[in-house]
Each structure stands twice: as C-alpha cells, then as structure tokens.
Image 1 (spheres, rainbow, N blue to C red):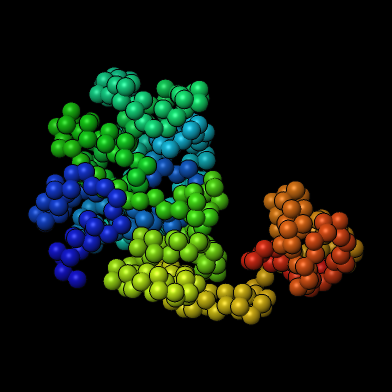
Image 2 (tube, rainbow, N blue to C red):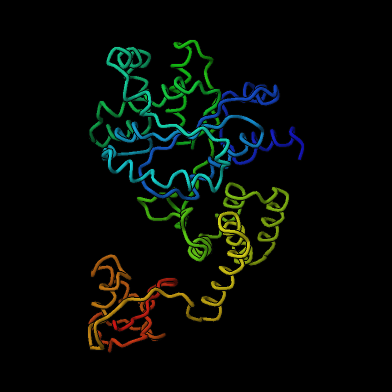
Length: 399
C-alpha cells in the first residue's frame, strides 16, 4: 500500500470526527514527523478491545513514521474523568494506580511497536505544578463552558452534585498536550470536550493548537453499553485464546461488521462482501467465527486461533467437554446441596446468583441439567459441573 493510501485509510477508516480535517491532512501530506498523543487513565488493570480501537489508530500514525506518545494518566486518575458520568468517579489511591499500570506496557505492546513509543506519566509535570500556574490555567476557561457538558446538565436536572475537582480534569488533560508539545491527540468520542481543552490552552504557551481525531466507542459483548470493565462486557487483551474466541462468538449479530471494521485489518472491500452476504441470507455465525479467529490470531497467533476454533466447535457443536477444565479440590466424597457446590467452587459470584442460575436451568452436573436449588448431589472425584455455556469445573479429591 502506498503512503497516500495509508493516509486516506488513517483519516477515513473508523474515524468519527477530525478537528481540523484540512489541517491534519496537510500535516500528514507534508512528511514532517508529528507528535501524536493518546492518554489513558489507569482505572483498571486490564485493557480491552474497546481500547484497541484508538490504539490501532495510533499505530497507523506510527507506521507512517510519526512519534506516538502513550500517556499514562497516573496523576489525573486521582481526579477521575467525568466524561459520560452521572456521578463522580471514586478517586484512586497511589497504590491502586501503580497496581493497575503494572502490565499496561505489555498489553499496549500487543498493538504498538514499543521500541518506537514514547511512554510518559502525567505526574511528571502535574506533581510539580504550583498554585500560581494552576490559577493561570483555570483563567482560560469559564464555568459556563464546563456546564455545557451534557452529563453536567443531566446531573443538575436530577439534582445530583457537581464537584469542583471534576472541572479541573479537562484543564489538566489539556495541559498534558502543552507539556508534550502534541501536534495531534486521539481519543474516543466521549473525550471530545477534554481534547478541545488543549486547543484553548496551547496558544497561551506559544504552541499551535493540536488537531484532534476521535474514534467511535464500541459496544461490548452485550451489544448495548460501551465496552467497560464496570459493566462486565469486555473482551480483554489478556484473555486466553479460548475466552477471546468464545466471547467474540457471543456478541450480537449486529456488531459483526462494526467489530471487523474497527478491530481488525481485514480490507474494507472484504468486509463489504461479508455484509452483502449476510444481507442476502448467509448465516451470521459463519462470519462471527471468521471474526473470532481473526482476533485471536492478531493477539495470540494463528496456531492458537485454530485451536480455539476447534475447541469452541467441539464444545458447542458436538457438546464435548473441554480438555483443560480447572480443578477444584475437595476433602472427601460426600452429599451436599447443589447450591453449596456452585457457590463454593466460585462458579457464581454469590449464593444468590448461584440460586438464580440453578433455577434458570444453567447448571449441569455430569451433563444432567438440575433446576432445583435445594437438590442434593453426591460429590465425588471427577465430577464435572457446568454453568452457562463456558464455565466448567472438575472436582478432585485431595491426596
């Protein structure tokens, strides 16, 4: 692919908005290396495929020879990004933040070439900022501007509190671009207000305002809410090949084309063919399987993708038991209630959930469905318990 085509794909594929498009196009065509920034607050230890939408866009800049910057918001995470929040985020402690970022570099390396990435923490400058400079920064914004944000309007409508420290978040994020001398900043559509803050601040520091490129937010496996650890609908970069494949196969059919477009390198011409075929009556599951195998191949390699596909087909099409079931050690063979064994083996997060799963018919013991939560079973060596479609455990007597 020639450079011009790469520039066109960078600007057009999976892009929601560019501010200012003509400016960015001119910069990209000039051949001058740009400083391209992406900031992520370490609010959880695992990155998911929702994060890779913008990470992959950052990689496109990297492939064109630009200096990409992965900024870890270890300071701003103490405030919490208010974007799309109807309540203030719980501030994180330094210990929580450091724990969360332990594997960020390794996870980001699944998408970016780390040898060419500038990795920074915004505590480098924010920890040393004095009140005088902070006051100066806040003077560039009005309360009226802040209150224009939709979620603040919604909070006021519902008489929920707005906290002063939340107003500081976009201002500090904007200053990050000053500290890094960013030419371009990337983010999700929920970050537009924060990204624009830098354009207001940079001219005061004799820097040209950065261009902004936003990407769509992607729904999680439930097909409703955006992919988020708090919702529990994520496909994580650290998922095993089997889990990544299985979770992908669980997404609603309506997300297949969007996932192909935003999460893979499959050519748009091929994706259009898939869409046309499904519109003509082709089985969406076949294309979902293509998607699942492509994603596993990208992050775990082709052999793991082939194995994950075989395991999934064996499990769901042929109703076979997986070969690598986790084991749960028991003291002795005895009779217990099914509720106790499901709860004790952590196949459910609580006794209440265990009861609901049993009543819904989601629990099988050695292949037999049991719906009575008070039912008693004989716990013995080698007994296999299945919950839902993918959770298994084998009981093993301690030696």
